[in-house]
Amino acid sequence: MHHSEHAEKMAIEPLYAVVLLTGWILYLAAVFVSSKKHRPWPVYRSFLWSAGILCIMLALIGPLANLAHSNFIAHMAGHLLLGMLAPLLLVLAAPITLLLRTLSVPSARRLARLLKSRILFYLTHPITAAVLNIGGLWVLYTTDLYVYMHQNQLIATVVHLHIFLAGYLFTAALIYLDPMPHPFSFVYRSVVWILALAGHGILSKYIYANPPNGVSRAEAEAGGMLMYYGGDAIELLIIVILCAQWYKVTRPRIVA
Image 1: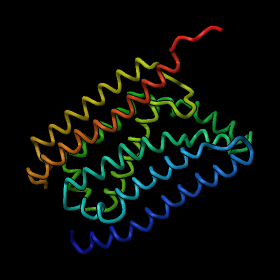
Image 2 (image 1 turned 45 degrees about the vertical axis):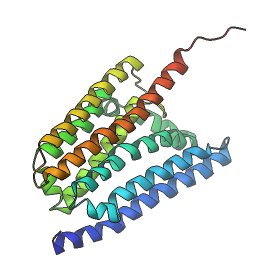
Image 3 (image 1 turned 45 degrees about the horizontal axis):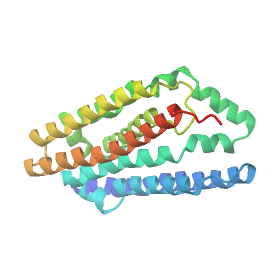
């Protein structure tokens, strides 16, 4: 890493830390306020939120993030943390539900209207979320964008933001933990999940055989395998949750 690039990265890390700590504290503050007004907020959701924030921190700050600039395997580990595991943990923490419980009634109604807006309908559509998530990864690893993000801190920040937001949007569009004003059927979401899983798997194999610019073949093979098997493990968690929700809704009711 050149001196100027290193200086830019060192300058952005405190900003990342402030943003993430702010998000962590705001969630816990909302838990406190909500629990005073309503029944206690489940403790395990606070742990899930904290674990999600920690995953983002590991991907953006510290040894793994520094190594990711010169090592593709470390970069891929960061990708799994930032774009897959952290979004899953944060979605399971149900932040929108918590926010709706915390806000005053007029503010909660305004938020509910925003959730029903046309723009959020398109953004939370499973296909839109899948294209932003998997399509973004194809652009990153099959063009020179991967090289540019390691030469320019602004581009790196935008790429990281996109990877996280697209991962969160995709996860939230498949498993409904928060209110979803425009829900899609379990069959529809399962089909989208299968197609997205295929796109992710094919990309990992493509990386294995066609190293991104600036990446050695050995690192590309190891990184591609990490993406393939690590991604499968997290995707398995998503499908288990989706199937559990599906079973809960459709299971036969016992009539007394």
